[in-house]
Length: 284
Image 1 (cartoon, one colour):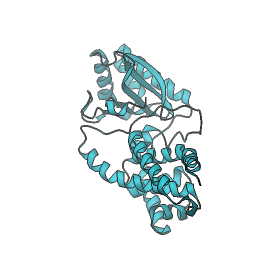
Image 2 (cartoon, helix red, strand yellow):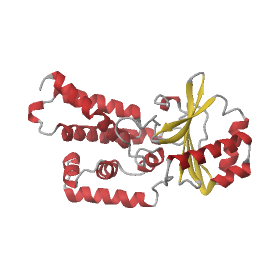
Image 3 (cartoon, rainbow, N blue to C red):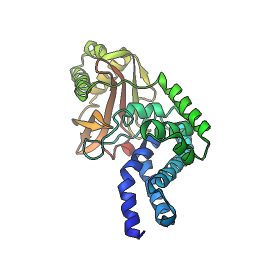
Image 4 (tube, rainbow, N blue to C red):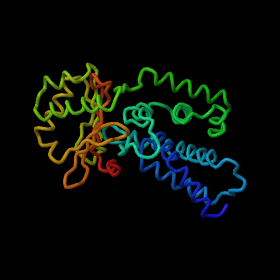
């Protein structure tokens, strides 16, 4: 295989590898770093000895992600305020998206798994790997991989986010929420929120954001109306597709300063995710 051939093979697999790394890490920037390292290893590999390049590359990327998660957990424990995944702008061009597994709400839930559980779950449930393939990737026997995937599914069962039946339902709830915030309509806002709604704000110490999660329809409604009254919504807000679902990006002078997504079943809003950390807004 010539260097040009090797480069073409990696390029062909790159979208799938990025999807794997992003779901493993919750960070597009970290996923890019992993792919850069995987590319270097692929370039240096004995290509003629690799019977299945896709499997080889997936194994390398997964193991690099596991190494990255070990240090990421330490950094996230020291993070200022709640940590949220990095949002990415998506559209319906190219490979079809798994709208549930790419959603910000689902990536938040994946953060509750151990690195090995996350790897086993993502490979099995998102990328449809067999347990034999997962065992090869993780360097463990099939029984252990089955147990990892089972524990992950049990752990996520009560935490899995809810999804609207259509993008239109999702966008309708999001638009109604923004309209009520703009009007300062506390009662209207509370009617849109579930009784156990939670608001996440990720500023990472780099931008204004609530330092703790905010629970309940009354407190969440007052939080967003208060932000709007203090000029927190000044700028140009636009509906954009973030992580496969309608979201909102606020820009000032053409620069993204905030992104927001919601978790909804189309009838009520269960969670709001607001990212103001500038380090996480490059992809929107």
